[in-house]
Image (cartoon, rainbow, N blue to C red; front, side, top):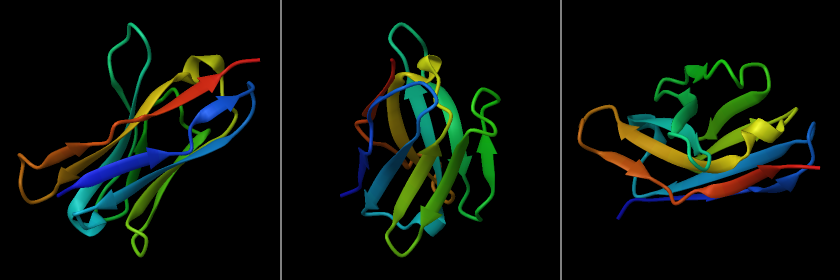
Length: 118
């Protein structure tokens, strides 16, 4: 059974930092493209950052230079380091896994809340 479990969210002041973790079980990261999405109340879910099975990374323009996605294959975990946080970064952050082999194998975590407020 595949599980993606996010952690690390919380309340932080503007300008602060958080590191989110996505612990994966039932899959091997080297066979999946991993992404972090976020969804704020009343808004559509948006892709924040992605790391491919080959290790390439990509970011939404709104977070470039502030967020960093990485992975630890030994721990089967993907991270999202978020620096210089802004109130508009407030959202539920969700981890996503897409198989590089089977198009219909897409998995989601339940998400972790990030609130940026003074």
